[in-house]
Image (tube, rainbow over all chains, first blue to last red; front, side):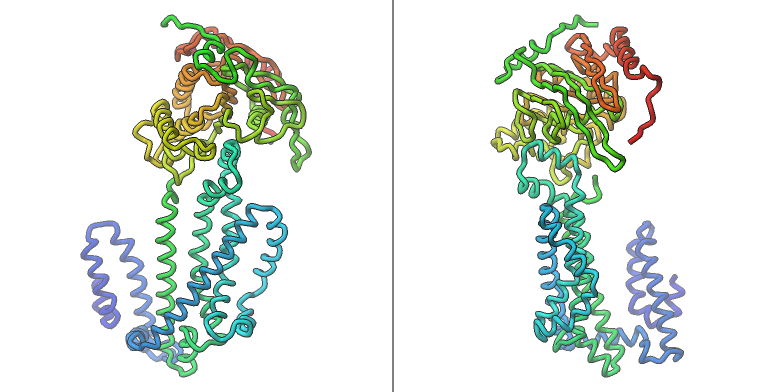
Length: 280
Length: 284
């Protein structure tokens, strides 16, 4: 492994120290394999990419080298416009996520608990889900304007259905004997919900939250593409029009990192709230 | 073998000093001509047909039979969880219904809530019934000691074995002091050794607390060991074949399982159930 690092000096500097450091720390333990292997494949992938870009086989405008992306990223993060755009997009995604989840949780609980809601609303929701909601972006633009509101609505709309389905499934999947038990104590519907149904359905709900947070980000970006004055989607469009492709990719990297952070937060929250997960 | 004193259920009940149901005063559970038919995709299934039996105050009665004989159905009807299609079921002087503090149910699965500790699980019914927290906690601790779970009060269900979870489930059903216990094959999912040990402990608990118990099982030996009377049921449709008193002495000794009279009882019930040869394959 040390040989490869010696033969690919450029990206080795960036990632090699990390690998060597990890190797040193994890020497002798089996964790070495778990951590080092993906690192290794990432390094190989980047090395191949770098080679292809620099060799001239592919036009650098189409596929910039990883090193160019990294230097573009370094340049871009020093600009305030980048962080302003990041903050705008993050807000749109998070507020949209919160709104979508709240709406899905409330409606899902009503549908799961009361038959009348199930009959009245579920077919409509399914119909709504089947239509391509992303195509609604221009409509939202007209309704909610050019600003952040239309992006938040888009984000909320996209993450609504997965959460709704999981809320309903979570309620349906509650242990039947446990429900009989609560009934035998004469628990009211509200008590049954609070003490049994809600905690029981949390694993399913959190599973959908992890997906929803990524979808909300996508919704925000798509809405920005359609029409916006600020945000990372706007940056992407601007860089793309100006053929500043390394900068374009740099913003993409930034977006991916943001998505990862959101996902990581969701996972962390899940492990705190559902402490009994996977332990039965 | 030690000189075992034979006590009648009334004497056990009298010792407990029952409130509304003074010892020997009328049966606790009366099942009269009960029927239940289920509608399934393949047509209607007569789960129970015109079955009758009673459980006297403080008595331990077992419902035994192969699957499909309707024993669980009858128990659920007694618990008020499902309605019967005919006949009447009177539990503790009142028609069967859910949410009664006098009645407690125990299922085959422990059904402990994984987000609650053992103690919190045992306290669950007291929260719903509105029993004072301090009193309930004291009672929970006593019961956990009674079922042999002292030291595990703050553990979570996944940290307990199946047998221990069922003990916790037993403590939970006893915490609000119901007069009548309905148990649906509570030890069926456990290995034989754990089951026999828990049977012995259940017999002890019954003898010291004197509750009325209706116990469903498919295990003939277990039914004979635990109960004062055995209601034998046959399937398709579910019907009562016979009601047999066991007449075994209390307190129950473990060795009674090896005695001839016990073995004869088991054979007698077996012959009743397998009168038409070996059991049929499950058609459900």
